[in-house]
Length: 116
Image (cartoon, rainbow, N blue to C red; front, top):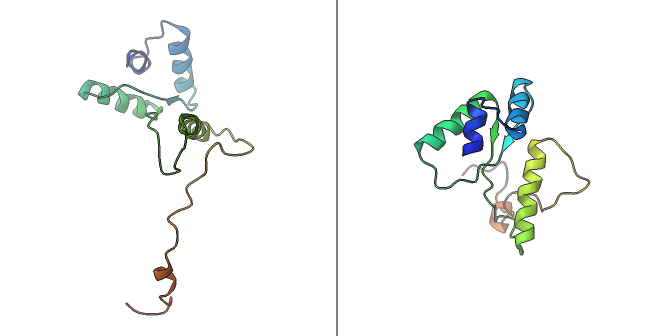
C-alpha cells in the first residue's frame, strides 16, 4: 500500500514511482497488483483514487474455475490475465479459458420455438 500511496499522491521518490507517474501522465495502461489484505477504508480510497487516475487495479486473486492441479497453474492463470490487461498476446494461453457452462441434455430437448 506504500507504493500505491506514492503513486496516488504523485510522490515520485524512486524509479518505480516515477515510472508509474509517467505512465499515468502519458495516459498509458498501468496495472497494479495490490496484494494487501484485508483492506481498510483508507486502502479502498487509495485504490479508488488510482482507478480514477486511470490505473487498473487487479488484486492477484487466484481463480479455480479452470481446476488448476498445481501452484504453477494458479500462477500461470494470474500471469496470463495480467498480460491480457497489458494487451500482450502469447502464442498459446497459459491456462484453459472459460468456455461457459457445459450444455445439459435437458436444455437441448426444448425446441426453440416452443413456449414455456
